[in-house]
Amino acid sequence: MASVKHDRVENGQTPTWINYIGGEWVDSHGGRSIDVLNPASGELYARMHAATADEVDRAVSAARAAVKTRALYEMPPHARMSLLFRIAIELRAMSEEIVPVLVGENGKSVSFARDEIECAAQYFEYYGGIADKVFGKSIPLGGGYVDYTQFVPYGVSAQIVPWNFPLEIAARSVAPALACGNAVITKSPELSPLSMCFLAKACERAQVPRGYFNLIAGHGSDVGEALVAHAGIDQIVFTGSIETGRRLLHHAAEKIIPMVAELGGKSAGIVYPDADLAAVVKSAAIGIFAHGGQVCSAGSRLLVHESVHDELVEGIAAWIKTRTMGPGLEDHFFTPLISEAQRDKAEGFVTRAVEEGATVATGGSRPAGRRGFYMQPTILTGVTPAMEVNQREVFGPVLSVLKFSEPEEALEIANGTEYGLAAGVYTKDLSRAHWTADRLEAGTVFVNQWFAGGNETPFGGFKKSGYGREKGVEAMANYQQTRNVAIRL
Ligand code: NAD
Image 1 (cartoon, rainbow, N blue to C red):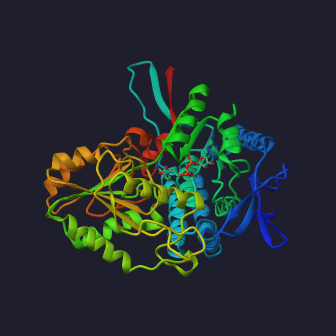
Image 2 (cartoon, helix red, strand yellow; image 1 turned 90 degrees about the vertical axis):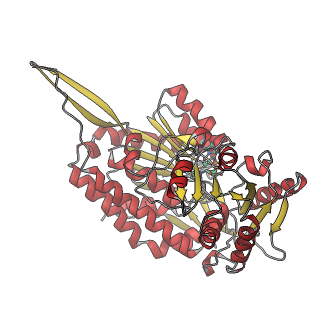
Image 3 (spheres, protein in one colour; image 1 turned 120 degrees about the horizontal axis):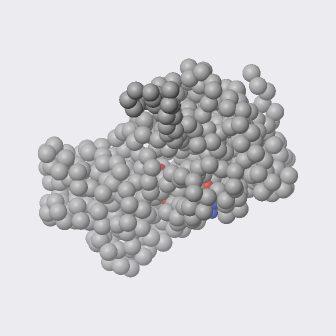
């Protein structure tokens, strides 16, 4: 087993975590670090060394050198498969060590943290399972020729990860990238950079060839920008907001390299009057309140047929009372938001919605007398399509409820934003479910259960929610390109 030099150093009371570049754990020479706060208390939890521009350069050089060795590309496919499986094994082996760190830096519950680690491990198994089943075609050209296609990795994959599911989203892109033979540089999110160090540790322990996985931390505006602007990268894989995505697309255009854009959402669930309302209550509540609504595919809008509107709103308000609020370490359902700014942002949306005429059915603000970045689960009724809260992503525990009377009207409201990440339909009538799903402008449609799907199902946006598909077999297309070889015999 490769030795782990040190992934963190004790610095007085505050542990300081470091970057992983070219197969080594490195202290940043810039002397800058990021304060990582515990969302449940607002107190300093740890420090993370921020990479310098030189270190970004070093990570790109390490990745370029790795690609040049062709070590992963020429590895027998079954060996690449085993390598990815070993990463999964190493991640699972560290699970109980990762859980408190992920909870401590991110605020999420122990249960959600465990699920995230398991999901991350499963990505390596899923793409490990595909790694030895990638092959091109033989194309007949008539006598005197042999023609075949090959799948070729892009080379150096620069990956930028958001803070809501740092480990899971990193694994979602790193696993298929390695399965295809690319070298990866991942920039962790500044608010939640620590748990991803375990991914680097798993890669090290699994003996991923030197330079094929690099992890750097830092703010988007300098370290992220230095990475995506670097001339030595061959693709960008970005998961985050529309605003940042747009900026990164300029960098991709400048270099003429491909970019995967997994951006935000404002997803609507349509509730027809024949739906199983008890099931809708639970599904819709989990759809918006899981991890405080800090989920790209959160069901932040519920479009309810007028005949069942009141019953459903009362049902969700009652469901909220069956769950408790508190620190993730105690495994409460309603855990704090990631930061003070995120909580203030969610509160601001509610205030402005009320000014525009919406009604707070429950919640609406931060809970009184609590430290940390808590926000009450909130239901807004009387929301209309033009309101800001119906049009813009809150990324917090705020459910907007709108009424409709005709299916066409529901579709118009659901499709009436610039987003197109996910959508949902609740009905017992399969024909109506299909009719609706087929008209929803979204890359994912959930029928009768929000978040249905898994690592196996493709995920990505229509419209400004982005393009490219992560997850599933489809994601392989992001990480390899086709070369045609035509031979005149
Ligand atoms: P963000 O865009 O602010 O940041 C995302 C990442 O980009 C961070 O690592 C940040 O440091 C980096 N970044 C910021 N500016 C940069 C720059 N100029 N150059 C390079 N990197 C830069 O988003 P966020 O607040 O971290 O995440 C929330 C957003 O992510 C929401 O909109 C959410 O819907 C979206 N999201 C989408 C998916 C998906 O799969 N579609 C998944 C999770 C989150």
